[in-house]
Image (tube, rainbow, N blue to C red; front, side, top):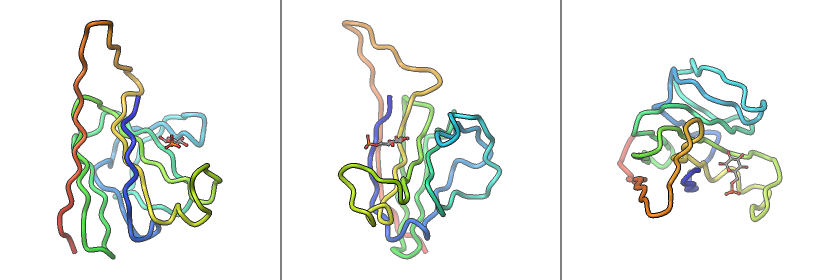
Length: 133
Ligand SMILES: O=P(O)(O)OC[C@H]1O[C@@H](O)[C@H](O)[C@@H](O)[C@@H]1O
């Protein structure tokens, strides 16, 4: 299960996603093979589709061109999906639309959440925008 917002960005090739360094991820483009991300930050140069495992609650989308950072705050789901289709055809998206968004999703992949009849599950996904340089 994932809560799946699309975030508007100035230019996908100029933004970075912070907060997921040194974490394990499943690469959706390689049959969910498990890797560890040793990069300082996430940048985008081609199709990107990863499930980061056991992430911190806050993940930041830094958009230098817009001089703002989107802080994605989640509680209740421990994983996070970061996705951009690049030039891969996606229904409902125009050919150049991939340049202007990224998804950072709150997700429960490795340990799915089961909600039985009569039970309740509560998750939080909060987005805020802060100025940055
Ligand atoms: O359901 P949507 O909004 O079309 O999103 C599809 C994408 O959602 C992402 O969460 C997946 O990691 C991608 O593999 C998938 O293509």
